[in-house]
Length: 115
Length: 117
Image (tube, rainbow over all chains, first blue to last red; front, side):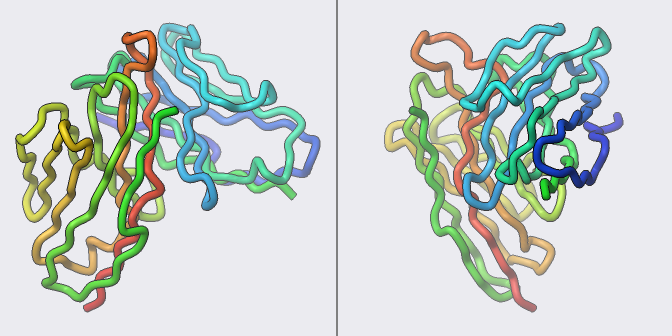
């Protein structure tokens, strides 16, 4: 089975711009979670989508948003970029996101640099 | 607020050594604890633990969970240079409502393991 894929792998933007990142989950997985990884804060949960609905959200400002399509692919968008948004953005997929025996598998991430 | 703390933050050993990585947690309505290995790419799943006292093993790696004392350890025996990575501990919790905190893992800071030849 193919793993989680993310595009693009690297992105350079300037402050004030917006960016869209894409994630394709493992075939058959319907839950997609997004995380931000920085050296200072580590891995932090952004939000989770299942069946095109956001079911859970972390403590990030409204500039961070996402969506999920009917084929379970997900996108996240960051508007009005700030320098502090520079990070590795990881997505993870699982069959239903309900935890317990439901493991999350991560994609390779998108490295976003904001200048 | 859910909290996961790993120790040590970094560790330098030589090939053949045995290492023990620690993970303690304080969460509401614990459901599972996961270990991941991260090199310069995606975190790779190692173990998921839900029951106390049951050891999970995969080759030279093993892990055990103590739900009473709220911690887990990851052991790596006969370390190799290829074990050099960041080891991440994450907890999935149900939250205050006692339900499911869908898709959310709370991660520790990670332990940077460096294995020298």
